[in-house]
Structure formats: C-alpha cells, structure tokens
Length: 506
Image (tube, rainbow, N blue to C red; front, side):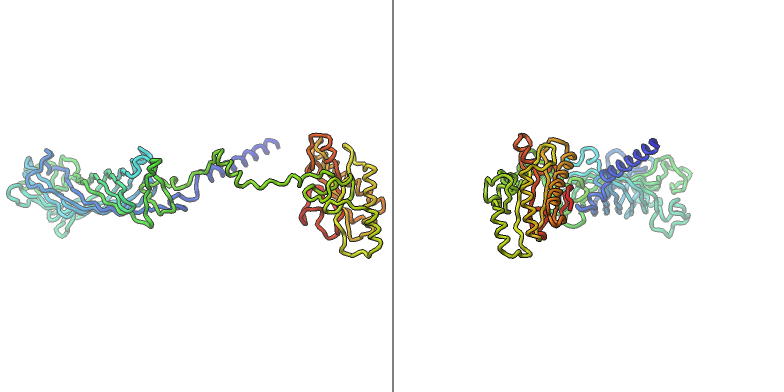
C-alpha cells in the first residue's frame, strides 16, 4: 500500500513539473503574432545582369563573337516566417546568349525566357553573428524549385544562318511532352535556383542589396547543343540523344530593392549613449526581417537596494501613534483616547477613559427612568496570576458592580475578552485565555446576573499584547481579561460586524 502511494505521489509530481515547464517554455503565441505585432511581408524588384554557363560559352573572361550583354528583371514576394527563416515566390524574365568559335562555330540567343520558383530563405547573418551585431544587415541563403520556359535559336558565326531552334525542330524537347513542337512558343524545363542575397535596411520601408543566383536547369540543351559536333549530321541538328556535357546553368547578379509591407512601419534606432539599438513597440511595427521578437518584450524589473528602499519609503504608511497600543493606567482604554490618565487600578471607566463613581452612578439611575436605548460604554480590566484562571478579590468586587449595573440596565450586555503573556506555546495560551474568560463568565452568572445570554466571551491568548513580554510588569499587564459594557445592538467588542476570531463564543 505504501509503495502504491509512493508511485501516485511521484506521478502527481511529474505532471506538476511537466505543466510548469510547458507554461514557461511554450508561450501561447509567437511574439510577432502576439501583443507586439511585426510586419512580415515584403515585395522585391531585382534588375539583373544575366549570364549563361554551358557549351556555347568561351570561358576565357572575354566576350565571344556575336555575344552581347544580357539582362533580366525579377519580382519576388517574400514572407518572413521567423527572424531566421522565410519563404518567397520569384518571377523572372530576360535574355540569354553565348557563342563559341571552337568546335561549334555558332552562337545562340534565348530571348524573353520566363521562370518561376518557390524558395526558402535562411538568414546567415543572424546564425553567425546573432541579432544585435550588424543590426541593419541581412544575408540570406536561398534555394528552391521551379520551372523555366525558353525559346532558343542557334546561328552560324559569320553568316548569321539559323542552324536550329528549340521550338520549330521536331523532337526538340523531352520535357515539352511531344515530338512535334512546331506550334509551341516555349520549351519547359525544371530549374533549381540557389544563391545568396545581401540586404541593408535603409528606411523603415525600403531595403537595398545585391542578389547572386545560379539557376541549375535540368537539361544540357538550353543552348541547343549536346557537348560536341555530330559529323553524321552536317547541320548539327539537335536530337534527343544526350551529349558529353553537364547540364546548363544560367545566373545573374542583381540590385535587390525591397519594399516592406505592413502597417505603421518603423525601424530600430541606435542610442548614441549606449551604442545599442532601442526598440519601442508603441512607436509602430518593426519588420521581422531585422527584429528578434524577444527584444520587444520588456525585461523583468530587478530593483537595486536603492530602488527598493525608495519604493518602500514611498509606500510605507504613516507611523501609527504608539499610544494606540499602550494603556498605562490599565483601565481598558488606550492612551490615545484616554481622557483621564492614571485612573485607579481596576476602575470602571467610560469609553473616554474617565473613572465612574458607581455609588453616584447608581443613585442617578434610581432617580430617573431607564431609556430603552440608553447604555453607556464602560471598560475595565481583570488581572490573573501566572498560569491561573482564578479571579483575584479586587477583580471579583469589580464584577459585582458590573452585575448590579447590568441588572439595572437590561438593554446592556457584557463582553469579556481574554489575553495571556507569551511565556508558553500559542495553543496553550489560547486555552488559558479561554479558561479565564469562562471563569469570569461563571462568576457573573453565579452572582446574580438575571440574563446569562447577555454575556459574550472572546479569547486571543498571546495574539494581542499591549506591553512588552520582556519584563515582569509587561508580562503582568498582558495577563488580563478586558470587560466591556456595551449596548445590546452595538458591534461585538470593537471589531467589524460579523468578524469572528478563533476564540469567539456567544
């Protein structure tokens, strides 16, 4: 049975740890989708200088005969998924050309090619240097998958005679899917783009940069060659056979102009004092391209000792008058409200601490009618010896006067509250205070109180001392029973209505 309880406890502990870790590690939402929203979409326009890499290319760092500079244009739609990873759709168009006098004695032109691809991006700058270094820079490695549509024509050097064309030659393209392509405009091939793009955040809306990309085309026939001249075909007609060369490629270097979409675009500003970039989420929306969402979350406030001291002084309540907690003459009324200091010990006093002459008070009561609502608040103390609940003779005399008063005033009641010093345990002192108030209640009932239901007792043990428990006078003062004579409809003791302390008993 003990072993089973141990396993149940272990399971509960594991569930508690798991839930706690889940709350700390997995936030409800990512920062850029949560309370501090970030702009994540952008549009890029890239004018580019294109170049072909294949058989009809001299590769001697010189432009070949009939080879002209070629250009293109790219448009990209980018979605930043996280500060490091993103995705984009690219559309490109442009021209390609190349020539080679050796072996081929030919040049080609591919005008108005089209290409589209889906690519993923990874911010190498953040991976290598973190978020805070080179804050305005972004270096993306990108790669993807797409299609290229092209129309290539090959010409003889010197004469300009067309030798072959990718779309009016029977069997010109395996990917196009038909032998007779005379009615088609473009040949389609798979392309794998890879590259690196460098961006700089110039304004909250505009980034400028350079894009270097190589497109790997899934064919060796972008320039309509197969890696060598087939002497059996005088005109070198393009056929389906594969030659000796690798697949063709084309690349470009372009100026990337990026417009960041989204509401209230802002960018971080460098603090000239600290040298760090300050970010204020209330100023607007930053771009996720350059922002770590955690930077927008304010750090926890860890006050210094000086801060803590200032806060404590600011919220510290005004000091309470020490007279509130002292009762020098032990008449049951604190010195702050006591209008008559140094009343004789065991005196019965009014709510203002003024001693009442009971003989005169009783004579006055006999000579006037008793009003139903009339009952003055009166206070007195009873003292006990150490660890005893027996009333002293002078305390018994005080209680007899109280009994006479209550019998004359049926609209009054007595509240008896017990206290002890702190020289025993808390539980023991509570029981001792209880015995003392019950002893006083029994004395009142047995000595002539006509209605015992008018007696209310409360006890607090050592919980409410009115003097230090460090010397004999203080200990004697705290060993007390307070008696209060109050109207029947008044609040019990001096506490809020309905309030119950541990020792309350009716």
